[in-house]
Length: 390
Image 1 (cartoon, rainbow, N blue to C red):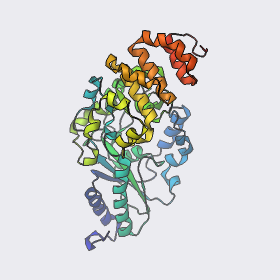
Image 2 (image 1 turned 90 degrees about the vertical axis):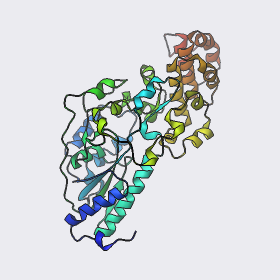
Image 3 (image 1 turned 30 degrees about the horizontal axis):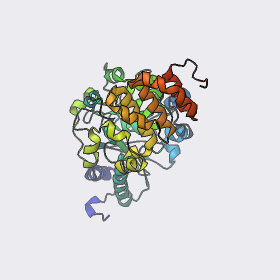
Image 4 (image 1 turned 30 degrees about the vertical axis):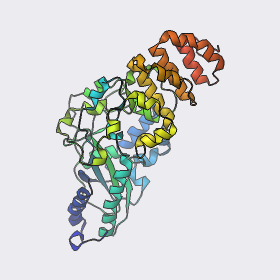
């Protein structure tokens, strides 16, 4: 990328305005600077959270705890952290879709391209310009790396971590994607943002599964986003009904934030909902085989969960719909090759037509070899001892 004379800066002070301008040209809505040591409490809070087991099956968080809590350990040479954010605000209230029980509710961020790819490519553009202009070293990170981006974004003044643990902005509400550029260049740091949640606790009250044991703390094991995406096995029964028609992620705590009244629709077309994912019919989704699943979600973050976990979620939504028009599709999934899918089809059948599930249980148990599926049949049949065999 050619660099004009006007882009060149001899001092860090002169470079900062040019960096901000270049980042906004690349599509970022907010650019702020902080120091790698600006979040001294993040490490201890992370350690306590992990010790309480609230990360669930996300074992990789334990393995990266030290680097995650201290950016200087991740890269000892870093002098400044450039925090950047892109607005992905939706064009409609995602909570309205929860009332359409035959439709699937997909989290706003997943209704189009995988944001990791887009944000990272833009970060690389800005980082390359910064490296070439200043002659310093840079590294870019987007979400999947062991970087605690939300505390750093708060320290940089982009917003503050709300009681739902997500970042809140006065200008963009709860709808911001974050990325960071670590650099060996010393840049003037911006002021941290103060907490503006006040007495509001709407995000805590609306959570369907009571995933917040207290303000500013999330128990991922109870979070629908975790359950539908990170959780690899059967979703615990205590949470299934609360999922409603949410088949990938959950926007409730984000969507109810009063600061969203200042938010605007995303400028980036790649963050606009694809028509076929805006309010897809559950009947179309539950019949997807692996090939059709991969085709529909090509380039989408949903593709990473795989077809079986996705259909697991869809079947729970079908059960929650209480709509017997889905019965033929549920019966077909009882014979699915994937045990996870069969198990959730049994549960859906038991919700839609309990008598039929009980009538089929004895024969199904005599033929089913997978213990997780057998357990669902026992549950639907009303057996009190789920560990017993038929």
